[in-house]
Image 1 (cartoon, helix red, strand yellow):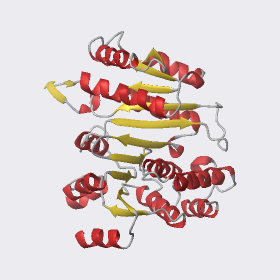
Image 2 (cartoon, rainbow, N blue to C red):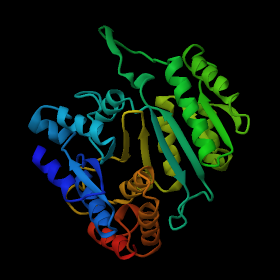
Image 3 (cartoon, one colour):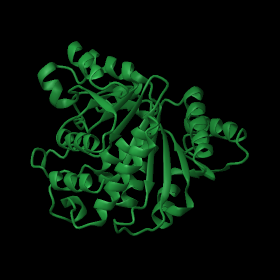
Image 4 (cartoon, rainbow, N blue to C red):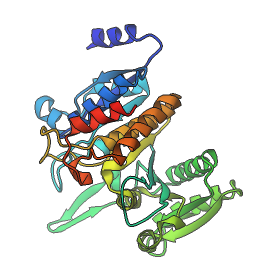
Length: 344
């Protein structure tokens, strides 16, 4: 393993080493597709690849090894395919583990209309900024007695202030006009109330950005009535998870949605859709989400030209007749990937 990493660095002077977690199910296929596109575009990135997730755990007994975590800390940047999490039993989510262990506290999910993908809405352009480390996803659960289980909702001033600042800084840096804090403080007065209090304090530091507040249930209604009312949204962990998937549905689904996770120690980019075990290994997966996430990663690395080149090639491909099944076509993952390369 050590010699492979040293060799990768040696043969690609001037390139940037990035940790790659292909993931479970279709993860390997879409990761392979991305690597082919990056190679065709001459992207100066070298991969340090590790198997993580449920499939790796069956072999190693661990969702993620210390070596894999050390790689992320060393490179500072990770690209990750989807990983499986059992429902109602089994191991803790690898995504939650990575976010808490690496303190990658800000999940950023853009949802922007793609002209080539017909949907109910036009001109959707929302960015969801989700707190990544606490709330109900802190995983503090217990059995009180037979038939009575509890889960603790943890909201802290530190994490709420940090995510609010990130949202406003993002708005300023990207020419955004408004930040909306999403909450349920009318019912959860202490937890969501604290989150809201922190957002209000931070908002005062950014008078150039319009600030408003929306209750989570009303927000969901407004999103399906008129999503153009929203710009940047900042949310606690659970609400952010739900609303970011809802927003993905507004633009065509999770197969088209990029995602990034930011922290001081590392930044992780990922495809947030499922592992699709029913089509895994059949060359039917749509690699678009991981390719869009890869473009976000390249911009983070300062490789804007390569990012634009790849993103534009994916968008051009989506306009054509070569589409995977989830987009209404019959093309394979390989055929879609080859057309992206053709359109570079």
